[in-house]
Each structure stands twice: as C-alpha cells, then as structure tokens.
Amino acid sequence: MSQSITFEELSKHKDSKSLWIAIHDQVYDVTKFMEEHPGGEEVLLEQAGGYATDAFEDVGHSTDAKDLMKTYLIGKMTEGSKEPVKEKLARPGASGDSSESSWLSWGVPLIVALLATYAYRYFTSSSNSN
Image 1 (cartoon, rainbow, N blue to C red):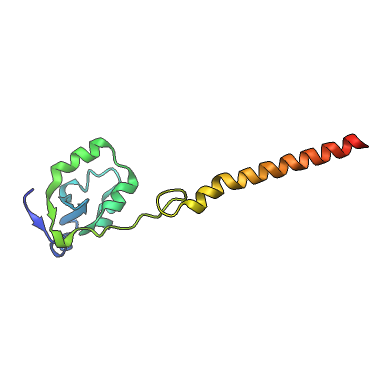
Image 2 (cartoon, rainbow, N blue to C red):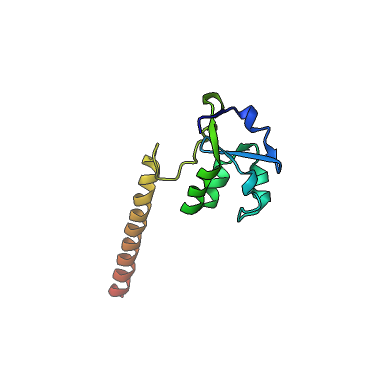
C-alpha cells in the first residue's frame, strides 16, 4: 500500500476495464470485484475514478464488507489530492450557538404548561362560583 495516488491518476480509472475508487483517502482497485458486488456493477461504476466515501458510508456496509476492502487496497491519496472535507449540517441543539434552541426546548413547554394551569384554574373557579 505504499503507492501514493493523485486525483489525476485516480480519475483515469473509471470504467469496467480499470475501476478505482477512493474511500477515506484510501484507493481501491475494485475492477475484479464488480461482478461480485452485492449492489451491482452500476453502483461501483457511478463512483468510478473518484471519491466514494459519502456513497460508501450512506449505505452502511457491514464489518465483513469493510474487511474485504483490504483485499483491493492499492494505495492512498497524495496530500494534495485528499478528499475535500464537507461540512456536516448542524442538528438543532448540537454544538455551536444552541442557546436559542435549548431555550425553546424547555421554555415553550413551560409557558404552555403555565397557561394550561391558569386556564384550568380560571374555568374551574368560574364554574364553582355559579
């Protein structure tokens, strides 16, 4: 696995005769695996010659599949060709400026509960006085 591969080199291997993909900056020659791939050849061909990390992770491969990948490992991306890091969409209440969302998560239910209590007492006291 000592081979360092540039994106230019990776992008040359994008058909059924020579199919390389990069997952987590590791390069795999999956040409011989195409016919065996449980998702079909098309799935691999769609990612051929490029970065396939997102597609690989989105499927949720098994531990066996991840172990099998080692068989096809041929190198790693060079420092200047590594896959660009994509920003993950922030979930509400996750890191960052969560002061507003955390206030909403407990403040709104508290206000609703207080209003419901007030309304209950108001209507029950009105019906008792009649």
